[in-house]
Picture 1 (cartoon, rainbow, N blue to C red):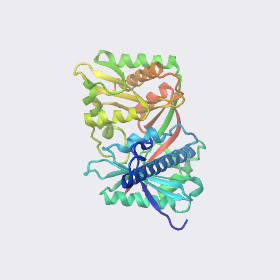
Picture 2 (cartoon, one colour; picture 1 turned 90 degrees about the vertical axis):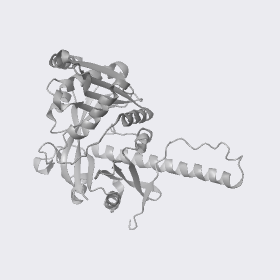
Picture 3 (cartoon, rainbow, N blue to C red; picture 1 turned 120 degrees about the horizontal axis):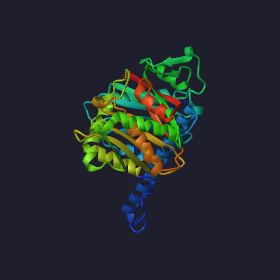
Picture 4 (spheres, rainbow, N blue to C red; picture 1 turned 60 degrees about the horizontal axis):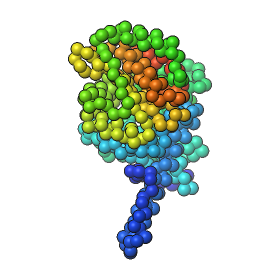
Length: 385
């Protein structure tokens, strides 16, 4: 492919077709404009759906499973998050989308960070498409004043390469397969591996004996100073400011290795909007939180996103314990409470998936004790633009 044309997809606000009511009744220019709008919307929907399909196919090919797929309808609300603007670019061959790239940043104009991702269909690799797409989104980032590019790139670990064939994270914890195409591409573009996140799966149902032991130990460690609260769906109004504060803390308190993640400030308004988008995506929210009884504030939280389709896995979202309250097994307490709620309210799901930094031993210890097993890794790559 000698001439690479990169198009930007205007992501539609809905996947439903435009209504044709009144199109035939109107005359002249208005009817023509209505039909053109319907055709343009249909084309944008088709392109968006095809691009997300490619993204999921490439990730499943790398990992060897499709459990992390988020379909077009599930992703659509996130493309209209005013706090984290995104743009989508594609390359076509023979009328088909064979490569795509995404650009994401924070709405705060003082932030210098962006998040980039590129995917190319296997049969179209080594033709310069990935290079052209990454060049393009890096140029978009520079034009917006973003100088720190971060990319989260999944890698499979099924073959267990020899130590010399592993690229170790700069943190000293975790590795990615050096010979894999995604790793070689990132290195060739000047990106450094700043961290490795472990992807883990918890098969359901959980071993109740193991869960009971963890629950008992966590309750004993927490004592009477902490109280657990659980809810389904949106955060109750009384807890919104506490949950928003914990979401902000997650952007700075979670281990990030050598990757310069910015503070991502959450307000109550942003939390409410995010919960509305998740509900619109076809995923229910289950949350468990720990209240510090003397202050009446929430200081630990864990939430799950559960797809309506019972054949698909639930996804672990935020799990956080405020720094000043660590050491009381609160992470164990809220995780177990949320698993109890999942089993009771959303039975039949095959598993729960989660991501954790390899250096985050306290959280990995919780997961391992519950029964999570590693199934892949995600490299966190960084480059100054």
